Each structure stands twice: as structure tokens, then as C-alpha cells.
Length: 320
Image 1 (cartoon, rainbow, N blue to C red):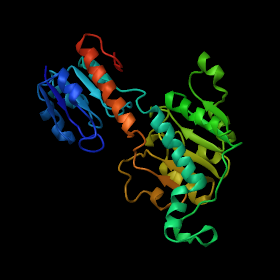
Image 2: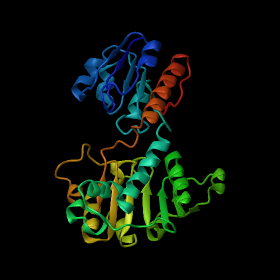
Image 3: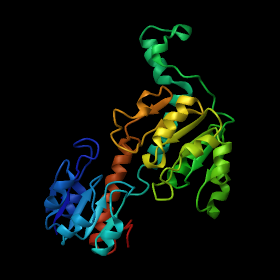
Image 4: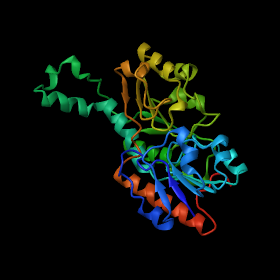
């Protein structure tokens, strides 16, 4: 068996421990980063490939006939043609649930940055300011109490559900829109509603679903017009869920109060993105999933996925 790691860095070189994978497959070659045109030559005759953002499609698969298993070091599989992999007999395993608590935590980090501006006040104090003499250049936002507000969750997987738990702990009413309402959700203390109701009633809308043909562009100009004037939108899921130009326009007009995002349609976020110029947009560079604890979970599950596949079954195969 031969294995190739196409993106060993994930975020930074050396932030992941690949020793578990290399113990399972000693004949492993590792690359820090790999451009699309380098993918097929680097895979070569390998049986196993591990990657994060590299694309595997029909063209790549035709050039790599020995490939049998792809381990994506992430939960989302947007960059893989799963049907093409199935046709070529290539199993694809993802890593679900590794960053549930980290991403839910970042969701509220963005919300609290909007509502109470701790980091901006910190800068002001360190510059010698105090309370009423803070200059406009610091960019303070109006402070807001979360207690009693209505928190809307679109998508009720593990991250959406954890986000809802945190919202309830803040004393918020929680509305949820999801495809499937499971019996175990009955004790969660949330109300399940349709999408239009979610838009109309929530003060804060938080997105927690994958990007699919049904959810791409979910928050567009029409949806934003249905929301309460001044509402807050949070996106720690996928950039493709949001029409970013419509969001920027809604921020500019005041229809949307604030946008907190850790995911974008194009990453890195282009310099010309209208979101960069919006003072009421709080943006982070897709790093919600990179706490030390989440990265350790990521490697533990990746290693287990590979081990169980080598043993003849395979966990978390998404294209059986």
C-alpha cells in the first residue's frame, strides 16, 4: 500500500500530527501544499490519498487507476466529485463532528464581538481612552443584550444544535428550521418553524447547514427583505449559503444590522469584496475549526477512518 498526503499543512505547516497515518501506511509521501495540476502526478500509483481542499474529479481519477480510498481532512466534501469516485470504486471518508464545539463557540465569538465589542474596547483602553472619550476610529458598535432575543438556527446538525444550546443559556428564544425533526429533539426547548417564519421572527439568524444545490444562495436579497430591519446574520458554515453582494447591500441600507462570517464564497476573501468596506461586517478567515482540541480530534478520526478501511470496513464513508 502506498499513500500520499497532498496537504499536510491544513492551516500551518506542522499543526497536524501525521504519525498515526504513517504508522498504518509506512510508504507515505507528504506534500505541504498541492496545486490542481500537481494532484494526479503526485498521486501516481498510490492507493490512498489524504487531502483538505484539493479537488478530486473525473479527470484526476482517470489518471490514478490505483486509487482506492480518499480521506478528506474536513467534514464538507464540496471539493470532491463523490459520484465519480463511486464510479471508479474509490471510497471517500470525511471527518464529521470534530469541530462541533469550536465552531459553535466561534459563532458566539462573532455574535459577542457584534454585541459588546470587547476587542475594540480593549484597543481603546490601551490607547489611553475611557468610556465617553473613545474616538470614532475605534469603530465601536451599539451594545446589545442577548437576553430575550430570538435566535434562529438554519440546519440542526451537531453544530446547529450546540449553537442552540448556547443561545438558550443566554436566555434567548430559539427557532429552528431543519429538514428532519427527530424525536430526540423534543427535549431541546426549541421551536421548529419553516424558513419564512424563521426569517420573519428571528433577531439573529445563524447558518449551520452544508452547501447543497438546495441551500446555495439561501440568504439572498429576497430572504434579507423578509428579516426584521437591523437583524444579525451569522455564517460559520459555508460561504455559498449567502449572496455576499446582497448582504453587503443590505448592510449598507440598514435592512441588515450586522453580518458575522467565518466562511466566504471565494477564499481568501477577495480584496474587492464589498464586505471588506462594511463597518458592520465582522469577518474572520475561516478558522473556527482550528482550536488545538478540534485539530487533535481531526487527526484522531482521520487515523481511525484509515485504520478501519484497511481492516475491511471503513468508518464515515460518504459515497458507499
